[in-house]
Length: 447
Image 1 (cartoon, rainbow, N blue to C red):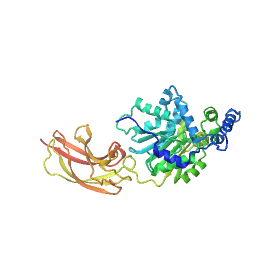
Image 2: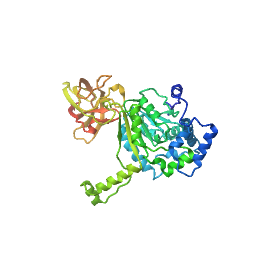
Image 3: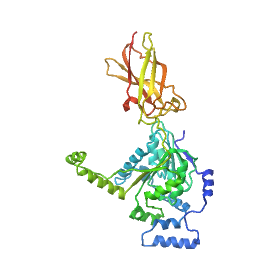
Image 4: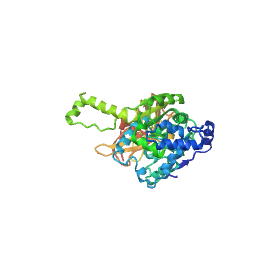
């Protein structure tokens, strides 16, 4: 299978864009000469650029082209491909923000996730490694080619679904309604000249219970030296991120809730004495709070937009896995090496998540056993597994049980053995590793 696949904005995107209207944000009452003169005056002025004026003078399509120009003119892509490990001044912030984003979206294997404004694709590469089915999206085709090159140069290890690459036309995603579980956007949304329109598209493609996560700069970003430079020299939109305005647009677009992360990537180091005082609620607590407030006020907004109620979670995550395993009956025939033992059992889902059926692959719940010979320090982990006979549509819901009989594989050698009967969520975790109780079964195998 090809390492990557491409979804080049086709008829769906084109038709929807025309329905919205071809006009961008640029003033339409000016002649082309007047527009050129007004743009030149803005860029040559010694006064700070107001981002709203920049947006008024350029169409969405023209601003998309500035992003393409940026990536197309990069001769040495090594710095982009090294991201997030580019420089010490940037890496801790990116990794800190990304960790908070992961905790917020709670990705599980098999989720469809859109990486909006993906650029060189480092976040998509990481999430692909975690089992997500990624759609890598950007307005720049050259940027997407760099992202694709990342996957070729650094193949994702182990089983995974190759990412898809989607060119975004600045207005419409060439994706069906209700087609993705999550959207992530890292330092890209503040470059959008038409945020209300894009939020509407995000709400359209998100499934019920879906979440869109954004990591963006703060409410005074456009006036920073870096933002002023980008607007003046590259005509890149550098919007201020005012959460109240974002939520007003998002709620009208169809999102039902907004949550903001409170965190801090700024270092806060203490002596051993101060650390113990901090744990005891001493004055260092207020100092840490002040450090965090300063960071949040000046540097970062990390927020999550939800669409509808989140449905019951499933066994693709370790969170909420728990079970009761009861052995009802063991076969009476003599156990001999290489032969199996007839066992009847009742397994109950005592956790908080739905167990996926065996046909689902990743995250499906199976019965298993670890084998330990008495007097030996060696345990054969995962010695035996068998699919649970659960409903193929619903799996096994919390509080429900399944009773069944199965043949438990025996060891090749004679001896006294202990089976530790367990459950496993495939490619996720054995239940015992997250605190779920196991059941022991003693068996003696005689020659």
